[in-house]
Image (tube, rainbow, N blue to C red; front, side):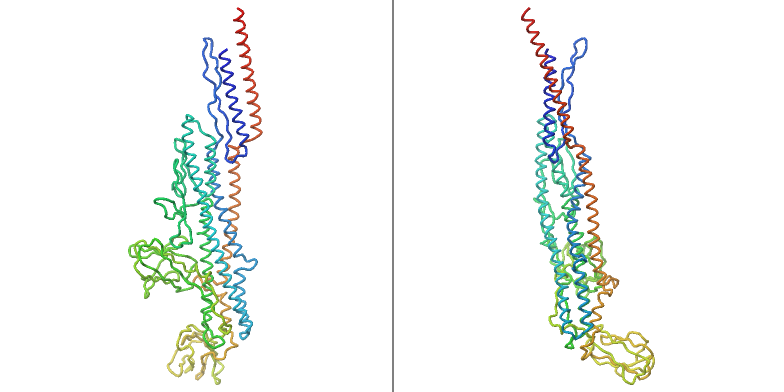
Length: 631
């Protein structure tokens, strides 16, 4: 009877455990991260009775969880990619809305400004047209400043979300480290049996962590998991974890960077992070926000610089050379907060056509300066020594150093980043709009009809002799004198440049033909300079004269729209991949209530059968006792 009793009791215990595990599966069917569990049964060693081996019951070997590490790794990777794209798309959408051609914005403001200039050209003496031009100029400036403010708001939002993400990452790291300790001690106390629920909790935390940043893991022999971020920096080691924090950028106190906290920390390591929401935030800042700010500033610089220059080539209603219509902040330089030397840099715009929509880092090492583009890290060739007499020159910039740099000192050069946010209208009086050309030309009354002179354009309004009356008298068909002096070769249609102005004489002049260039006095009805300002939008002013203001604006709007569309498609595709990864994990580890109900019925029947076996064994034992007592 002892064998029957033992076998029956072992079965009752095993099936009771199986019922308990199945019930736990049902209870946690909707618990995030829970993996289906099952009992592994094994027959006890049989006993030999001389005429054969007889079994001695059943044991529960372990409670095993259904877990596919490859599927979980795939899920974590998809979580990281999706988290990055989700964060990235938020900002592409915001920027796309900002620069969209629908509903106004910068495109409408730029066009409205040049349309207003054309209106002044159509009626140079109209006070209403001139007032409308100043109003459109103010609208243009406000639109640029508003766009810059919204970009600042995006940067501020990125700072806020970085701080929040790091707090979550630190919380996950702390919990994972704590679970490592519990799993290691729990496994030892259970003689190597895995604490499945703790493992599930830890795996779920790692999956949640992967949505914030890309992670890699290793598992030690004692069951502890080590978690690494970036390019291999340890976040969790056994029961210890390293906290992440934010530090101010070396070039901008309002810009937060990621760093490890504690001893040896404090150094910005933002560049090592990729994937997850954290990677998406950092990528949005470096790949979207900063470049678009620079492009916006390049556009503002090109409009303000060229309009101001052309304004200076004309004269206003008071007969004075035109003053700047716009004011804006030019190239900026910032010394790193980590610099050891006393050097500082000043930057100025030397050539608008060579100006790019890039920022640069300037590094002093071994007695020389090296200029690199921020966007791709490429070295930019420079000329000059960095002095006032011989400034460093590169990409349309002049850089002058003051003070003594130390080895390793770094400087950030931002040629256009501040331009859009600082754009303002400098003129306050409509009479100061220089719609007229500064000089005018005329032909002597007795000239032959064989030659004619152009209206004249100003090349250098600072020339002291710009308004000096100058007469060109032809001494032959191929030579002329200036104010009766000298003999200068003449080519029909060729440029004649004097005193800061330029004219062309076409045709074949006769001997004695004379042409005069003088101040455009009383030229209130002249619209030549207004026409020139209006034409700026179509002239090549950037990329060495190959890209116009209109082209640069179109390129900016198209680029932002393309990035938004690409982010949308990528996010949609990655979302589908993530759903598939979740389904694969669920297929391997998820609880199917129908299956569990069937298993519960199976274990119930087995338990009842084992109980019946025990009841029969008890009845047989009682019969045996009764027989012995009656003998």
